[in-house]
Each structure stands twice: as structure tokens, then as C-alpha cells.
Amino acid sequence: MSSFKPFAAVLALLLALLVACQPTGAEPGASDLTATPEMAQPTAETPAEGAGNAVTSAAIAQLATEQGIAESDILVLSAEETEFSDGCLGLGGPAESCLQALTPGWTIMLSANGREYEVRTDATGEQVRVAGNSAGASEMDAITASAAAVLADQLGLTPDEITVVSAEQTEFSDGCLGLGGPEEMCAQAITPGWLVMLNAGGQEYEAHTDLTGTNVRIADAGMGTDSTDAITASAAAVLADQLGLTPDEITVVSAEQAEFSDGCLGLGGPDEACLQAITPGWIVMLSAGGQEYEAHTDLSGTVVRLANMP
Image 1: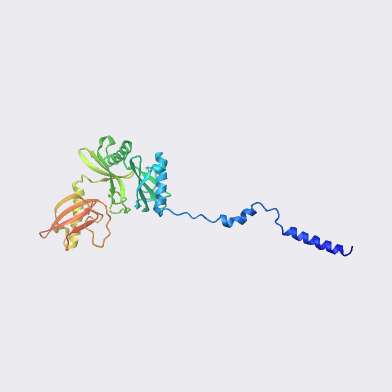
Image 2 (image 1 turned 30 degrees about the vertical axis):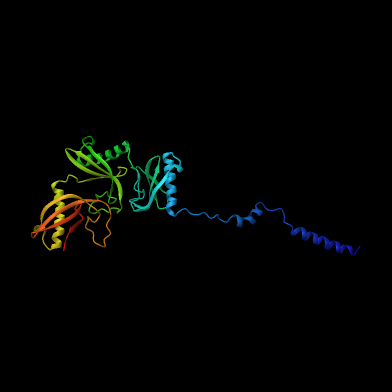
């Protein structure tokens, strides 16, 4: 009996150790944890074709939502990187406050149901706006009414005394719609908008607006003598300085409005980067010492360049 008791004790200890080594009732999720490293391996997704594909997908989704059409019915025509004039991608609403800074992004042309759409996104596709490529009658009326109201206010008239002659979409050379003042800092980016011709008292006026008609500037389309004199005087002063003469020695031969091919008024240097946009301004012909000179200015006469200078 005495020899059986130690054996029984050893056997009991071995059984206890064997039980202790067996897996206990697993804690909830324990088996999951052991599988986690394998299951958590990310599935490699083949990226589409660069950033352009992500933004086109966002553009398609936005257009589909706004127009109530299936994404599969939308065709991508083109996608190109663009710099917009503000944080609203150049499409801010009337009461919207837009960051006034050049904003990189994309212009994406889409087609659906036989119609083309212009969609703009920021660089990542997080912000998407659909532009009104062809304004409807109500949109057109709102834009021309806005331009007429601004002109009426400047002339001290009522909007009823302003007649709309024409309105057409265009692109301006900068964020000031091509009509910035001498001390004004204008975003140097192509800005889509409207050119609205108005008539008041038999005089025609040119109004520049952004796409929504929120920002309106009146150009001196029918400039008075004082305005023309200021432009020719500015051109004469620049020529006089170049020739080492006094402005009194410069004679103005003619002055007429013109449209130049770029932001350098068609007179950029070989190494000069000129904004590639139609730029309204003036061609002023001057005479000094029996020699004629051609000067190009912007609309305000602030920027003056001389052609064919030695």
C-alpha cells in the first residue's frame, strides 16, 4: 500500500499537467486573433491610371447625381490639369465667399445624352463643381440683369434705362476679368465669364462678368476724351523716357482699341513667359523727331510696351 500511494500521486500530477496543457475554452475572438495576420493582409488594388482617373470618377459621380442619370451613361471626353482663379474653382455662387488664390485642379469634359458638360475638381477630386456650359434663358437673364444693375448704379440710372445688346461667354486674362486697376493684385489665371454689351442713352458699354454674374466690371468701351487722353499720355510718357525726351516733345498720331494675343500685349521678349489669353487694350501711334512709334497699352493705360524700339 505504501508503494502505491507515491505512484498514485505521480500519476495524478501527470494528469493535472496534461490537462493544463490542453487549450482551454478560448476567449472570445481568440481564434480570430490567430488568423488576423493572414486575414489582415491588404488586398492589392490596381490603381486606375493615375490621379486623373480618381478625379474623373468623382466628376462622373457628381454629374450623375445632379442630372439624375446613370454613371454608365456618362463618357469622359477629356481631362486636363488646370489652375482656377479661386478656391471655388471659378464657379462660386452669388453669396459664396471664395478663397482668392490660384487653385490647382482638373477640367473634365463629359458627355451624356448627346450633351457635353464641363466639370471642375480640385487636385484630389474632393471638391467637384459642374459648370453651366450653355446657359439657359433664366441664367442668361440673371447675368445680363446683374451687369445692367451695376452699369445703372454707376451712371445714376435705373436698370429699366439700360438695354442689353448682346451677351456671350468668353475667357478673361486674369481674375479681375481683364479690368484690374493700377494698384490691384489680380490672380493671373484664365477666368471664364461673360462679355455683355449694354446700351444707355445711345451710348454702348462693355461689361465683364464671371460665370455666375456675381463679379461685374464695366469697361470704358465708349471712352470719353479724358480717359483716352490719360491712355495716350501714359504711352507718350513711356516713349519720352525711352528716348530721353520730355512728354511735350511727343505727338499723339492716333489711338484705337485692340485685342492682343497675350498678356504681354503682343510684345513679349524671347525669354518672357506671357499669359496666353486675348488681352484687350490700345494701340497708340506716336511721333517724335519725325519718327513714328507704336505703343501697346492695356485697357487702363497702366501697362505700356513700345514696338520696334532699337
